[in-house]
Image 1: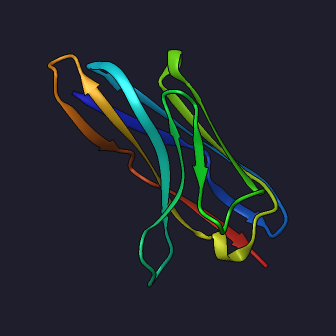
Image 2: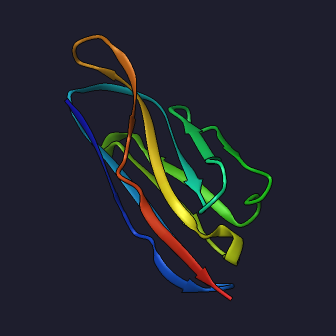
Image 3: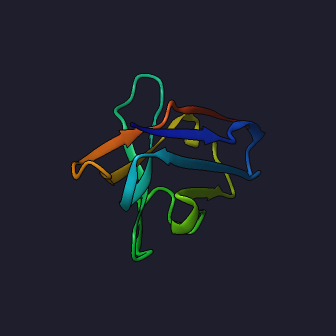
Length: 120
């Protein structure tokens, strides 16, 4: 069994910063990729950033230059550093991980989601 636990998030004023972390634990053989999605009320879920096991990162155009994704493969952790936050960054942020389990199956696992609210 695999679990992803997120931390961070909260309320911040526009222009501020927040840091989200996500730790994967359980029957993990290897992590292939990790990333973050977000969903604002009334909007579709949006892919925010991804990072591969080789630490190749990609970002949504809306966050390029403001957000930085990083990972620690030894600790099965992915972090999203968010700077110069805007009210439109408000939403529920969920991490995911593509994991090869010790049983030999590859699946995508999800965190529980954490609320980020940016006030104007």
